[in-house]
Image 1 (tube, one colour):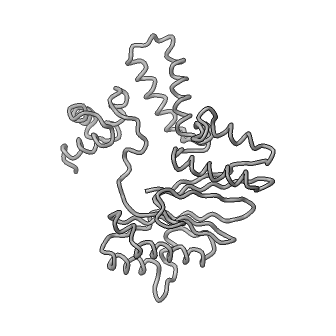
Image 2 (spheres, one colour):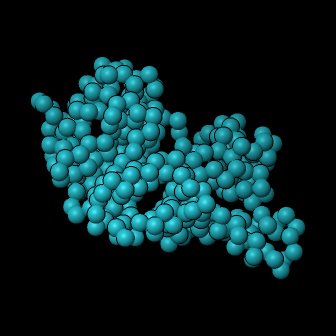
Image 3 (spheres, one colour):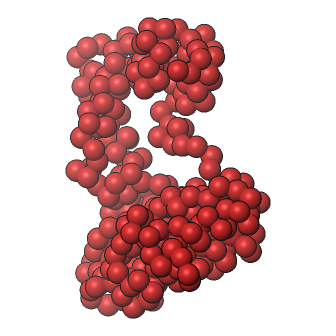
Length: 283
C-alpha cells in the first residue's frame, strides 16, 4: 500500500493540482487515484493532459521493412545515455534483422522465443542487459503485412536513419503513388508525430472515454454558474473542441492551420488517396 505522501505526489504529478487539493481529493475518494483525478477535473483543478501519467522511460524505436512486412520495434532502457550508444543501436538493428528473417506477423512472446544464434531472442536480451548494465525491455512490436497498401513513416529525434525517439507510420491507398502523394503521406506522418491523435475519427474513439469527457465538461459548465438553458450549447462547443484535438481527421493540419487533416486529404481526391490506418510509437 502506497503511503499518503506518495499518493499525493503521484496525484500532483498527474494533475498539476495543489498539495491540499490533492490531499482532500484522496481523502474524499478512499485514496483511489483515478477517482481523485476525475474529482479534481470536475472541480476544474486538474489539467486534462492525456499524456500526464506516462512514465519517463528511455530507449528507442526502430523501423524495418522488406517486400513482405514493415515492422516497428520499441526497446526501453533505463537511461538516454545507453539508448544513444552504438551498442544499444546495433542491438536494436539486430532485432530488426531477426523480425525480417521471420518474415511474418508474430507477437512479442513469439518473437522473444525465436532463435537467435545459439539461443533465443530472450537470451540475446539477457546477454545485452549484462553487457550494457541496464534493464532492457521489448515494449512494442508492431508488424504490418505489405499487401496492396502503401506505407510511409517519419522518425523524430533520430539516432540513425531508421531509429529515433518517435516513429509514426501510415497505411494508405492511391491510384497513383506519385511525388505529390508521397510528400502528402510524409507530411501526414509528421503531423501525427507532432499532434499525437488518439484515433482516426470520432466514431473510432472509446465510447466510455467520450461519455466520461462529456460528463466532466457538463459538470465544469454547471459549476461555473452558467444558466441551465445554455449548458447543452456550451457543451456541444466543448466536445467539438475535444474531438478536434484527439481525432486525426478533425485536427488542424500542422502545415495549414486553417484546414483540417480531412480537408487536406479531400484535396487529393483525384488520386483516390485513402488513409487506411496510422500508428504512433514513442518514448
